[in-house]
Image (tube, rainbow, N blue to C red; front, side, top):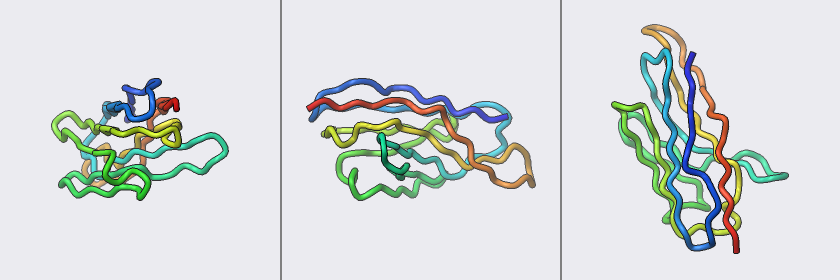
Length: 121
């Protein structure tokens, strides 16, 4: 019913930048929190950053000061600007959103398919 489509991943050298985008589409009544997670091989998925519909933001400790999350509520799109990238930022990045499909329905979490970010040293 709701699809999240990520884009913007790729290969970059250490110190470089990338910008990820995630657009939500489908049967959407409301979108609350939108978040980016990442998962590196052999590691657990971790929260990178999140932003509420009102603009409140949270960041994981490892990305504070380097990554910036933003969103366009009119487009149901969230962005992740990643600067000063490090090899340890290499992971699959997933978009997550809390959505409602109609008035009165419960919130549920939608996930994107993931986009690979690789940072070379």
